[in-house]
Structure formats: structure tokens, C-alpha cells
Image 1 (tube, rainbow, N blue to C red):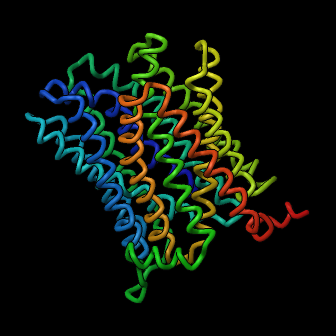
Image 2: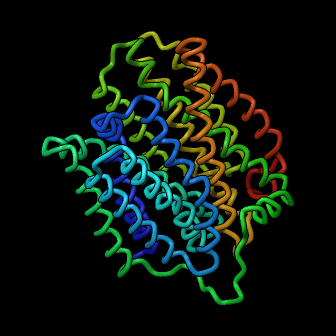
Image 3: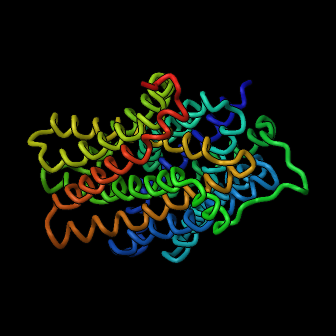
Length: 391
């Protein structure tokens, strides 16, 4: 079996467990007396752990191999869901999410694994498989979690823990190591990885785009439930269907379309177009006058995210030294996690202080600036990395 297929299944099952838990977690925490602020801090604690540990796991995967880090993350996820199921207080729920954030910080290691087993020309397709796993996890996970919650609030947590344990066992036996390591293999620390990135201005630009895009999307994500409830009277069920729609578009684009488009025009041309779609989609949300027009806005947003994320990851990988893939991709994931910390806080502040449409206008404005910067900044790379597009 192809290593790409095995890593796709591994990531998908991991994210399926994540998708099972996320929609239920606020209600589970509220049952232990959590306030709205505490529910928000649960998400922040998870993202902060990813910010801290993504470059650490990436660096160690460069040094000792990808498979041990992937297995460590799967077992950590198993233990985090087990801790949720056994939690008897809010502090224990926080502890479980902190463990989950540390474990979930191994996604850049999976991306580095894909970089190891793909050629530069096929890298966007491989990175798209991780994105497709995200989308599919968010399509099927909430539905499974909703069904299992009928058997008790802890049932989805037990199932997610068992799923990760089965995933760990399968990966142990089926997932081959993707790189040869030795005691002489060096690994980049966070500061050293940043210094290496500074030597390549285009790489710095891509890392900044990682942060901006994630911050904008997470600002949308954090406030959309409140906005859609106030504007359209949506319930948690209907909001879940909307996010499933976004996940479906992401899965289709990243699982099938992105590779074909990258082959034709290259990542440096596709990234600005994708960012413009994100800006347009988020900017249209507050002006959607009906559910069908809202679906159009969300579809454009999901289309942009679907093309942008694997293209960005592929370009970061291609501009990195092969021996530094884990460290640099970990740095990129760390900046993305920082965006998930800052974006929701900024969006929530704007929503409360200036009205429910302002988070989307603000995010769209930042994305238009990112579009202009990426269009100009990546112009040289259009010729360097995709000769067929010259002229």
C-alpha cells in the first residue's frame, strides 16, 4: 500500500476524533459550570499548546524520524479523549485539552512525511490530502458525535479515544518511516528555523501569510455561530450543517482539484487567487440577504481556503532544505496556531464593541492586503518554480 494512502488514513482517523469532540465540547464544559469565557479559553489553551509544540515535534521528527512523532501524537490524542471521558471537574477538562493540543501539534510532522515521499511537482497534491482529511473529519465527526451523545455525554469521548488507540496500533504496524536519520542529523530550533527563513524573503512572506489567513478564518469561525443565530435564527444543528458544507467543499477541492490546478498554473499564481477568494467570501457574509446567498459566500470562502492551504504548505516545503522540513513546517504551523489564538479574540472584540458585521469586514480587509502583498511578493517565484507558466 502507498505510504501516502496510509498517512492519509492515519490523519483522517485522527481528525475524525477531533471532529467528534469539537461541536460537543462547549456543552460538555458547561455541564461542569464553564462560562462563555471559560469555553473560549479551552480553545485558546489547545491552540497555545500547538503554538509551542508544533516546531518542537517538527524539529524532533527531523532528528529521530517522522513515525515516532506521529505515533506519539496518536497516543497523546487517545489519552486526551480518555481524560475528557473521565473528567469530574472543569480543571480536568482543561488538562485534557492541553494534552490534546500537545498531541495535535504533530500535524506538521505528517506534512513533512508527505514532503519526504513526494516530488516537488506532486507536493501540493500530497498536502491537499491532509486538507481533505480535515474536511472529511469535520463532515463525519460531528454527525458521529451527535449520534453517540444519545448514549451519554461521555460516549463520544470514549469512542474518540478508542478510535485513536486503533489508529495508533494500525500506524505502528503499517506506516513505514519516510526518512533515514542518523546521530549526525541536525534539527532546527524555533529561533534557528526562523533565522533560516529570514535568509529567504519569499519564505518569510509565506509564513506571514500562514498567520494572516488562519487569523482571518478563525475570526470568522469564532463569531459565525453568533452572527447566523442573530441574522437568520439558526440553531446549533443548522450551523453544524453549514460547517459540514464548508468541510465538503474543502474535501473536494483539496482531495481532487488542487493538484490539477497547481499543475496548470503553479502555487505562486494560485496562492494570491485563493487569498482573494477568501477575502471575497468573508466580505460577502455580512451582506448575504438570504440563506442561498450565504451559501454562495461560504462556498467562495471554502474554495479559497481549499486551494490556499495546501499550496502554501507545498511552497514552504519546496523552499526549505530537505533536512529541515519538520522544523520549518513546524514553525509555519506554530504561526498558524498563533493566528487561532489572536483571530477569535480580535473577532469577538469587534463583534461586541462595534457590531456583528465588523469581524467579517475587518478579516476581509486584512485578506485584501494579504492578496496585494502575495501578488507582488510571489511574482518572482512564478517564474522560478513553474517554468511552464512563463510569459
